[in-house]
Length: 164
Ligand SMILES: Nc1ncnc2c1ncn2[C@@H]1O[C@H](COP(=O)(O)OP(=O)(O)OP(=O)(O)O)[C@@H](O)[C@H]1O
Ligand SMILES: [Mg+2]
Image (cartoon, rainbow, N blue to C red):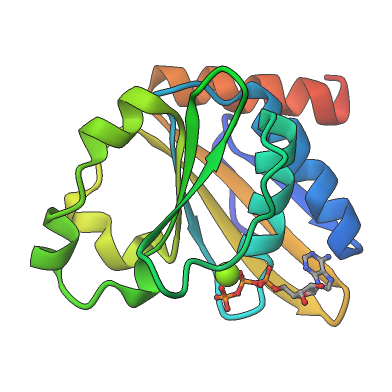
């Protein structure tokens, strides 16, 4: 059995709706400058979780996989933007380097599916979410913070979710 870092939070979801609700809690805590990388196989639930994140963060915009553009943008009434990226489609590190993370992070949180594909260019401080397919309706996911801000964010998420 793996020994979990005390800052790590592990959740089990039994439905897509439950994953969305977990996402809503996380989304309610996100601020401009926050970077969240998601890893996990096809169908693990990354986009489903992000649809909850966008709702909880406060955007009414529908969440879809970024297919024709590299980055989807979801808006909120205060003019901040939540950025949703899919690194699966990014062919190379030099293409990834064209992405202006600094500019995006000033305007809002940034969420990246398949973040492991561009790990080399990501800031060291970030929240990492690994999602796993367990069975048709069951997924597990783990929040691993790197850096002070993300340790605090993960602790808040733990409080909202487990009340401890
Ligand atoms: N507990 C669950 N949590 C999340 N999704 C679930 C769950 N149970 C079933 N599902 C279904 O699994 C699918 C997850 O797809 P989703 O697009 O979110 O995955 P993804 O990780 O973004 O995949 P991709 O790598 O293709 O982008 C959806 O069809 C969803 O309804
Ligand atoms: Mg997806």
